[in-house]
Image (tube, rainbow, N blue to C red; front, side, top):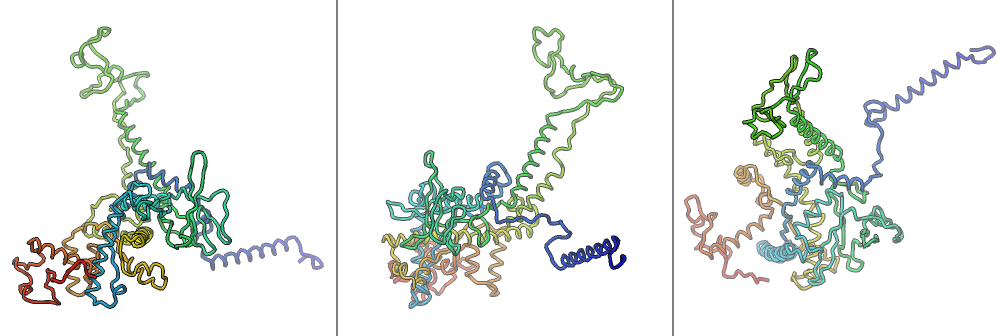
Length: 551
C-alpha cells in the first residue's frame, strides 16, 4: 500500500491482474455451464443464419448438375424409376360401412368393389388421354407425375394449376416450374397478406395465391393464380415440394442442395483422373539419360523401317528407308547413345485409390438421400442377406414416398376429376352431389373419394421365400390377409377376393378351372361344393341372382 492511503503503481497492477483472472474464471465457468456444440473455442466456426437462403442460385446449380454431372443424373434417375416408374395407380375404394350402413358386411364389400371399379376405370381412361388430361396436350397422368417429381426435386418446388378443358368441362392440369414463381415489381394485396418469393400468404401463413412470371414478347407479365376458388372453395392450385422443409418456410430447396459441392468436386476428380490416364496413354515412353550421355542426342529421330515393309519409295527418297511417323508393332530402337535407355512412361494413373474414394463419397450422398448405395450403383455384390436388407430399407423409403406423392398431388387430381365428372353428369354416385355442397356431410364425401395408390411392385430378391414366410405368418396368426395383400399387390384383401371371384366366374364360363381350386392331386378342392348351398353361392361360382345392375 502506498504512502497516506495512495496505491502504488505495483499495487494497481496486482489488483488489475486479480480482476482479470476473476473475469476469466467467470467466463470459464459460463462456458462450462453452456453447451454450444463446440469441442474447443472456435472449433465449430461461424454459425450461419439459414433464414437467408438463395433459392435461385440453388436451383440453377441443381439444374446444371443434372445436365452435366453423371452422378447427379444417375441418382435422380434411380429415384424416379423406383418412385414413379410409369406412375402411381389409383384403386378407388369407397367405404361401404359409411355409404351403406344398413347393408351387411358382404353386401357393403360388393357395392364398394362395384363402384370402385367404375370410378377407377373412368379415371384411368381420363388419365391415359393426354389431350384431355394435360393442359399442354403432351403428357399422360403417369408422365405428368414424373415431370412434377423430377422438377420438384431439381428446383425445390413448383405449382400445379387446375385449368378447364372447354370441350369436356373436365380439369386439365398445368405444371409451373419453381423458377417462374416470382414476386412482381408492383403489387397490391389484401390487408394482413404479404408476398414472399412469389407466394402470397395470409396472416396465418396459409398460401392464398401464386404469381406466375411469363415472358410475352419483350415484356414480362405476371398471372395471379388463387389457391382456392372464391365461390366454390375448390382447389385451383397448390405447391409441390421436392424435399422436407420447415413449417414456416414458403419455398422449397432442391433435394440435392446439401450435396451440391460434393457432387461437383467428385466429378472434377473423375475428370482429372480420366485426363491423366489419357495423357499417360498418349506418351508411350521416355528416354532416360545419365551424366555420360551426349548432349543433343535424338535416339528416336532415326526410327525407320526397310522399304519393303513400308511400300514404294518416294521419288525424293534415295536411302531405301522411310521415316516412321507412328510407332508400329515390332519397332526396334537401334540408335541409343551410351548412357541412354528407353523406359515406359509412368503408369500410376488413374489413382489406384480413386474407386474406393469415389465409393465412400457416393455412400455418404446416398445415405443423406435415404437411398441404399446398392440401389444407386446397381451393384449387389454382398450376400443374399445384405442385398435383401438393402432392398427392404429401400422399400421403407418407397412406401413413404408413395404416401407423399399420393397425398401431395395424385389424390387431389383424382378428387377433382371425380367431383367434376359427377357435377357434369358423366358419372353417377348416389348422394355425392349433396355431400359436396353440405359441409356437415363431409364423411359421405370422404368415403366416396377414398382411394388407395400403388406404385412399382418391386421384384423380391427371392419371391418364393417371401411368399412362404407370409404363409407361415398367416398360419401362426402373426399377420393378416389384408396386410399381406397390400404388401404383395397394393390392394386390400376384400378388393383382391372380390376381383379374384369375378375372374374365377369368368374362367368357369370359358370352361377353364383355375389351378387354385384344385388340390395337390389335381382334383376339385371343394368336392361337395356343387351340392351345397352357402348363402346362395358356391365357391368359385356366381349365383343366379348375381347382376352388375344391382342397386
